Image (tube, rainbow, N blue to C red; front, side, top):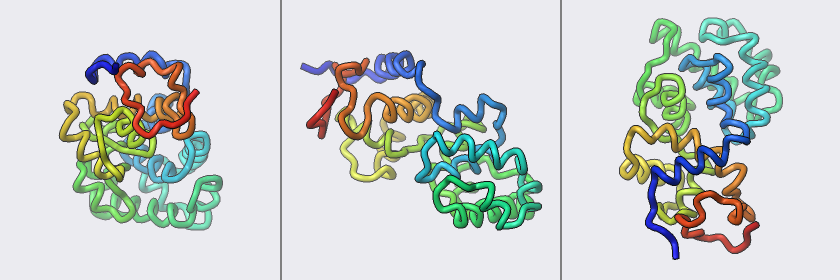
Length: 220
């Protein structure tokens, strides 16, 4: 029999369990000193359909050349694509980044708007990156739902959603705001390393007694 779901206990146990694993990319970059909203948003753009193992070195390479909107606008599209080598869709992402940098300089005096509406108004910036960048850089409450967060909360049985956008709305309506950034900080590495998509490590899971294991047919 499973125990009634207890968010505080679940997050506390997960925090201990993931301590030995790498942090999610944007939290890792923040600890390295890449703390501005622009840097965090750019890193999130890089992360789309790109593994953390690639995102971090690509972000670091890019930031050696451009850490501000002004510096990015000095790069040619060709140079930016070269710096983005390794991530998916480098040409498309270069277009998005140059558009963001241009908007920051021309509309916002070099500083991106620190709010959800302002960021999602920028071409190529969706709810996931807006919420995550605001949460990490500006410490504003927001939930970013990637494939790991979406899978984990549905596997637990607390959500019954089909799309990440639906999961985001569910969590925002269910989880206290002060826990929103923890959802990203903890569940991204938890889903990547323990509660994996194929054959999750259920026997080593610290929260198995709270998990309904929805959809799990094979586990380790």
